[in-house]
Length: 184
Length: 75
Image (tube, rainbow over all chains, first blue to last red; front, side, top):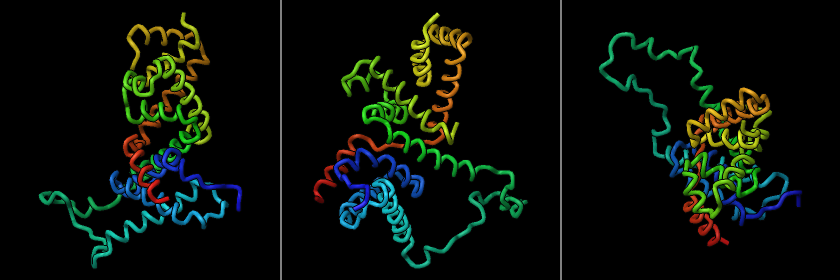
């Protein structure tokens, strides 16, 4: 047995959001991503006895999720001919004129880079959030990502606003520290 | 003038647009005087920007509970 152990009881709380973000940028559909995460947990449970403890729990789950994403694409492409790459000319058929020029990639475009960057960024932030104490992470998620109002959060978690702002402050300071090396 | 602790709270509230006009003025004035808080505010604003740019998504509490139940069934 290696240094790591599996604790399936904590999987959903600890890794669901991280895995979900990983999946959602790859399949670009929240529903499918959710199913893939669920399947990943099932598969993890099923093959838990094969876990040697060499890798951290999260890395191991991500490896399973990667397989699930690939399987997903295999499945939707399994019908004959669907796996072909199709290129239509144009989405708006009434355009005339410089159609060949329009198809050329813009050498100055940084769009694809920024998409990649924000994927990495999302995982970096999610990874840092998962290192926060549970309560702080919960408050930060509710406030920042879900955008729930201060009042509603206070009611739901049964805390007062100054508690909430202290937690937000600690969470944000920790996140700045954690992201400091790569992103600031 | 407000203290640095108060400034930090106002700075955090500003990230969620929950400060009044007067509070904003107080914060601005403090930042003008205090270098440390100005640095903190700059970083804090950057963090908000990054979070927005990353377009993070989370599963709702309800969905997580459902996931847990399903997982428990498999034990």
